[in-house]
Length: 331
Image (cartoon, rainbow, N blue to C red):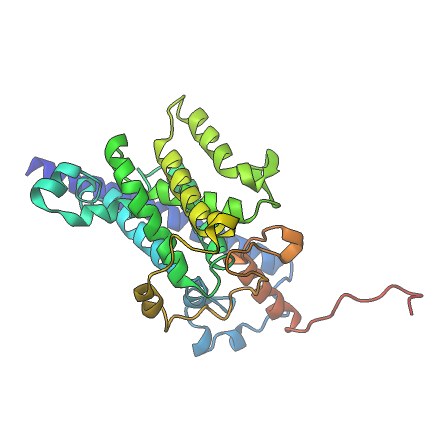
C-alpha cells in the first residue's frame, strides 16, 4: 500500500510539473501578444473573420490535425507508438519492465509482445530522450518522403528487416530496449542514400552525410563517459546489411539483377490503399535512388513552425503574393 501511495504521489508531482510548464508558456504567449498589439502588429488582422467554425481549434488558421495527417503514414504510426510506450512507462501508466526485452519472460512465460514493444521504447525520460525523438522523427520522415516516397510497404519491410536482424544480436549483447537501434538503422540508410549531402553536428561543424551515423556514435561515446553504444552499432549493422542486399548486390555483375530480399506481396497488398499525403513535397527520386532536390542537399520538412509562419503572413498581408520584384533599369 505504501509503494502504491508513493507511486501516486510521484505521478501527482509530475502532473503538477507539466501543468506549471504549460501555465508559464500561456503567460509568456499572452505577454507576447500584448506587446505585439502595442506595436500595432495585429492592426491589419481581422480577428472576427478568423473566429469561424472552420478555424476553431486552430492557431492562426493552422490546424494540428492537418499537420499531423500530413506526416507520412509509417512515420506517423511509429511516432505515436513511441510516444505512447516511452512516455506511458515513464509516467507510471504501466511498468517499464512490462515492455522491455527480457528473454526469460519470452521463453518461459511466452510474453511474445516483448519482441515488438522494445522497438518503441527510446530510453529514460531525459534531455537525451528529446534529442533521440527529434532525430527519429526528422530522419524517418525524410526517408519516407524521399527514398520510400509512395512506397510505405517497402519502408515497413525495411523496418521489419532491421527488427529481425537486431533481435538475435540483442540476445547476445543483452540489450533490453531497441528504439535507438531503429534510429541508427534509419540514419545509416539515409546517409548511404544521400552521400553527397552535408550535415551539421550540433551546429559546430559539418561533415559528409556518409559519416553522420558514426559521428553520432562518437558523440554518444563521449557523452556517456566512454561507454560503447551497442544499440547504435547494432542499428548501423542492420541498416547497412539492408542497403547492401537491396541496392549494392543487385547492381553487381555476378548477381545478374537478382534480388536476395524483396518486399513480401502481403505487405504490398496491405498498403495498396495507402496514399502519400498531398502535402508531401515532390522529389525527384526513384526506387534505389537518392534525393535530387536542392542540388543533392537534403531539405528539412516544413514542420509546425514554417506552416504556422506562412499562415500568419497570409493573414497579415491578406494572402497576396507580391512576387520577387525587379530592379530599376531591368528590361
